[in-house]
Length: 230
Ligand code: NDP
Image 1 (cartoon, rainbow, N blue to C red):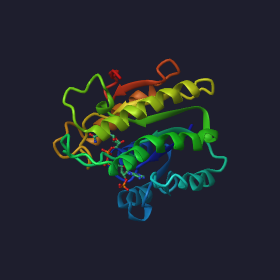
Image 2 (image 1 turned 135 degrees about the vertical axis):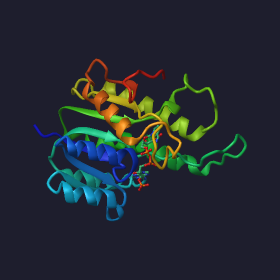
Image 3 (image 1 turned 30 degrees about the horizontal axis):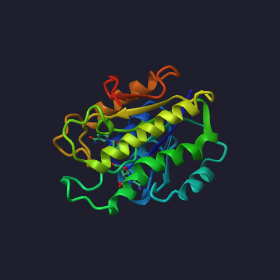
């Protein structure tokens, strides 16, 4: 049976590859991005998959836009929600160079928006619908051996805390939740020296999502299925 997948940040990088692989698998894809009119890669996919791909505008820095998404969906059911959009914030800052200003934007997109998204779409989740949150190993306190990246690390650690609570709160409704580390991936965020391409990262994460059960809900896994310490 065709499943409906909703993906945020679908216009480039990992979100675009999730969109591609979901379309290839025959899924109905609701691809959310903040500027659909500029999303050329998604438009090209929409020509190849006119029945399967829907483009919806969603700026996660503007939580009121979730109301428009709710209106767009109406009574429709979503089988898989992939909260992928994320921002890194200023790169390469040393201790002493941080200022308060970017923090709120990073937390808004990486932490608050995924929570508000799940909350807004709760009634649209199909029975057994799964939720995948794109986290990062950089959110692992245990794994932090190099310091720095204060805002990004803090945002992904906070996202993990949110994902764990969602897993607990949605368990009775039968919606497993997983936090995913995509690997170090060649995207605008990951840069050209990253170790893997989006194809490898996303096919691995799709396997983790396929294998997600109530028992593994609330876990934090790498794209290669290995568990990551908090
Ligand atoms: P990119 O920087 O390549 O893409 C980020 C995506 O998020 C874009 O689609 C971007 O849209 C979207 N986005 C950013 N801000 C907003 C917003 N306010 N509203 C809506 N969409 C927004 O990143 P990746 O594809 O590499 O990363 C995807 C996820 O994976 C992120 O959560 C990231 O933290 C995580 N990750 C990535 C790693 C990597 O090595 N690449 C490693 C670990 C985790 P727009 O084009 O409009 O800016």
